[in-house]
Length: 482
Image (cartoon, rainbow, N blue to C red; front, side, top):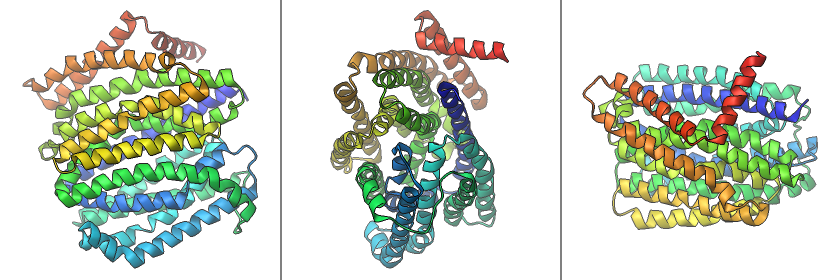
C-alpha cells in the first residue's frame, strides 16, 4: 500500500476519532458543569491529580516503546504488558494502604474513600496503554474511531444516571472509571486479530531491553504530571476547591481547542516518522511541513477561542462559570507552544532520541516548578500566568535541539508560526470587542466565529500563504476525483 495514502488515511481516521471523542467529551463536560457545583469539579480534580501520577508510573512509557521498536516480538509485548499490570496492581495496593495519610496531607481526608475506589483506573489505564501502542503501531485508527463511538455514550449514560439520583462527585468518579473499563474490554477484543499475542509471562531479557527507553519517556511524563498535580494541590490547599474548579475547567476547555489535532498528530506522526528515521531528507521535510500545517489551524483556533471566551462561557457554561474567562485567555497564549511540541517531540522519539526529549522536559519542569514557587502566594490567576509562561519555554528548548540534532534552521522551524500568530492576533482583535454587543449571546457567538474565520482566510489569501493554497488545492483535487 502507498505510504502517503496510508498515513493520510490514518490521520483522517485518528482525527475523526479525536473529533468524536472531544465533541462528545465536550458535551458531557458542559452538561456536568451546568448540573454540578464547582466544588464537586474541584474535588474530582484533586482525585485525578493523585491518580494521574500513579497512572504514569503504571504505564511506564511502554506505549511509545512498542511503537518505536523496529523488531517487536510477542515476548517483548508480553514482558512489558505483564510488568505494567504488576506495577499498576502495586500502586492500587499502595493507595489502599496509604490513602488516609496522603489525602490527610493534602487537606482532603473526606476524599480518601473515593480515592480508593478511583484507584481501579490504574489497572485499566495500564492495559489500555499497551493496547493503544499496538494498535497505533499497526495504524488501526479506524478501529479506535469505532471504540470511541461505542464507549463514550455508554460511559456518559452511567454518569448521568447517577447525577439524576442526586449524586455529583460519585457520578464524576463513575464516569472516569467506566470509560477506561469499557475501553479495556473493547481494545482487548480488537487485539484478538492482532499479529501480536500477549501471554502471561515475563522474559527479563526483553524487559531489560525495554526499560532504558521507556524509563526516559516515563520520567518526562512524570515530570509533566507532577507539575500539573502540584498546581492542583496548591490551588486546593491554599485557596478553595471553587478556585481550583475555575482553573481546571478553563484549562480543560482551552485544551479541547487544540487537543484533537495535537493528539492526532502525535499518534500518527510517531509511527510514520519511525519508518522514515533513516531517511534524513524526508524526515526533515516531515517536521517542517507538519509544523506549518499544524500552526495554520491551531494558532487561530486558540487565540480565537480566547477572543470569544466571555460569550462562550455565558452561552455554554452559564454565568456561574464566568470567573473562568481570564484563565481561558491566559491558557490560550500558553498553549501556543503546541505546534513545536506536538511535532518535534514525536520526531525525537521516532529516531530513538528519548534522551533529548527527557532533557528538554526536565528543564521545562524545573521552569514550571520555579513558576509555581514564585506565584503560589499571589493568587490563582497569577499561578495560571506562571503556568503559561513556563509552557512557552518548550519553544526555544525544542527549536535549539532540532537545529542541533536534526539540522533544521530556526527560520524554517518558526517562520510559519510567527506569521500565523500575527494574523491570529489581528483576527482576535477584530472579534473581541463584539463581546459587548447587546444582542442574543448565541447569535453573537455565531457571528464572532464566522467573522473570525472569514477575516483569517482573507488574510491568508492576501499574504498568498503557500500552506493554505496547498491545502485548498488538495481539497479541490480530492473533490474532483470523487
